[in-house]
Amino acid sequence: MKSEFTPPIGKISQINGQCISLVGNDIDTDRIIPARFLKCVNFDSLGESVFEDDRKTLKGQHPFDLEENKNATILIVNSNFGCGSSREHAPQALMRWGIRAIIGESFADIFYSNCIAIGVPCFTLPKNSIQDMQNHSFNKCLFLEIDMNNSSAKSKELNFDLEIKESARKMFLSGEWDATSALLENEKLIENKFHDLPYLKFNNQF
Image 1 (spheres, rainbow, N blue to C red):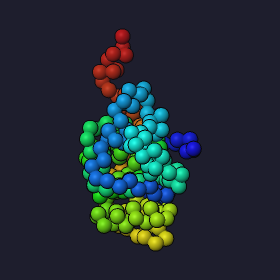
Image 2 (cartoon, rainbow, N blue to C red):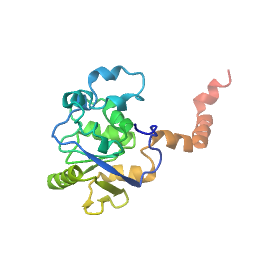
Image 3 (cartoon, one colour):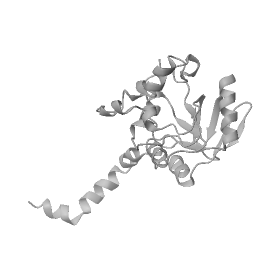
Image 4 (cartoon, rainbow, N blue to C red):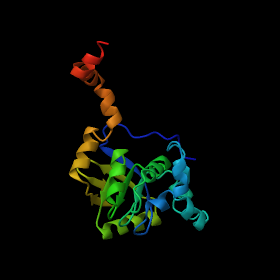
């Protein structure tokens, strides 16, 4: 069983964890979380249903069902990951399963943006580097240390210079990706601005 879900908050400069590899190009959002699960009132239970149909087909042999991957937090994928419909449920499901970062050859743009918005960095690497990571994780447990400051990932045997959009990297390092925390930290400024708005002052006279 996974430990209780704790969402990422604030500044993110370091992500350490075991890798889980998922081989295949063009894995779309309907495979990540099938459409029937979009009726949920909130995202809390989506982690249990991530890759639901693929997992049923593989009858316990899907990477997300293997005992050795149960504590993995870094997902290694191939090209055009997260393509298809723009459902935000897909990154939410991955995050609630336990994924804290994704490294791949390429990502669908909207999926990438949805990941950034919930604090899950998406890094890219050339195809041969991704294959090296995947082969290594299949043969033995691959534990990576990701440093957001210099966009690097390293293990005992591997070192990679990761690529990430500079705007996204700065958002993670500053914590600006986390809109809720930013609002709470600036509560006093928001309150002052609220009282300075002339039309609100006018309405308060009645």
